Image 1 (cartoon, helix red, strand yellow):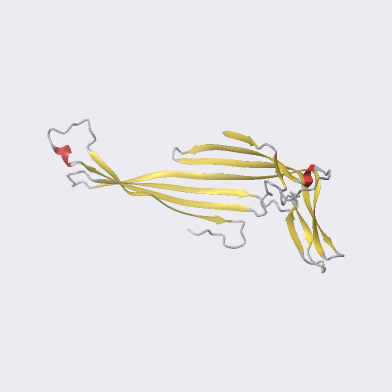
Image 2 (cartoon, one colour; image 1 turned 45 degrees about the horizontal axis):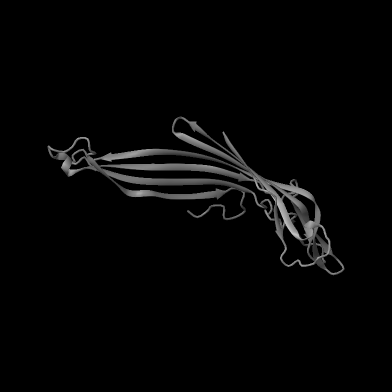
Length: 231
């Protein structure tokens, strides 16, 4: 099992439009944050022919402020503000694949030049999972009233405007399928039939007819529509 850890240094971005010289908290004119990432992967082999790579990605985000949106009933508008204070977010995803390779060989027994074809097939099938981080149990998204009726609401990320963005707001459960193929031809050189041919040299000429043509698609189990991706 292989793991890697990367940690970004804290990043600061100044607001170019801020020219005031009054003394204020640093987060009023700096956008800042820190990001840490962990990636793990391993590979399992089954029945000698089936290779199963597994990977896991985790990202941790640190911010010094959060976004707050409230409905201003007097002016009938949504008011957005930044609330200072340490806050963190995270997201993660997992992926598992199964791949195998098999070959087909076609030869011509009556061919004097011993012509033969070899076709390679690469089959793959995978599954990717990423949860919907906008659900209430994560606490990364909130709702705000958007009109005076009190019936319409908008979901927003409390990390909107953060330099590293926000955790994803849609679930992904994708099954992927792939098929690749290559076709090679092998035929014996004419000069290899000559008595003075150097036997230490290769007797055959190899050429590629199809070089890794591939088709694939995916099916998102969590999508409401258009679950099947174009091939």
